[in-house]
Length: 207
Image (cartoon, rainbow, N blue to C red):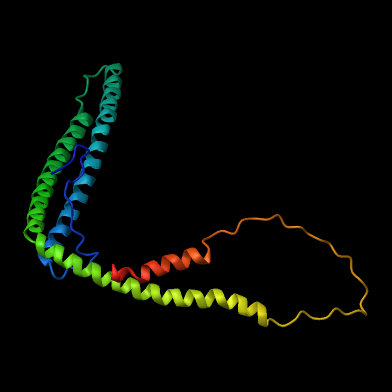
C-alpha cells in the first residue's frame, strides 16, 4: 500500500472538487480518515528520524560523564542517556508501525469503496463535467463581450477626447528638454489571442 519512497499508494477520487461529497458520504469519510492517518504517519517518520539521530548525542554525553567519573576516582557510570534515548526510539518505532498498519487498512477500505462505486462515480463525474463546461461557456461568452467593450472604449476615448489647451503666447518661452525613451516590448497577449481563447471557452459546452 506504500511505494518504495514511503508514499501512500492510493488514488483518491476527487469527490470534493466535483461537488460529490454529500452524494458519497462514506467515501468522503474514508478519504478524510486516510488523509489524516497518512499525515500522522509521516509526522511519526520524521520524529523517529530525529530520535535516532539523538542516540549518538546521548552516547557522547554518557561517555563524557564516564570520563569525568574515572578522573574523579569513581566507578564508571552507566549509560543512562543512551538507554533513555534508545527507549524513545523503540517507542517511536512501535508508534510508526501502528500508524502504518492503520493507514494501510484504511486505504484498502477506501480503494474497495471506490471500486464499488466505480460506474456511478464515472457517470456523476460526466454530469459534473458537463455542468462545469456549461458554466465556463456562459462566463466566457459574457467575458468576450465585456472584453470587446473594454478594448473598443480606448479608441472611443481617443476620438472624443477634448483638444489640448492653446498655448499662452504672452508667457515667455521656456526651455524645452526632449527625452527620448528607449523602445520596449509590450507585455501580454494581443487582442486577437485573448478573444480566440475566450471564444474557444465559450464553445466548451458544445464539445
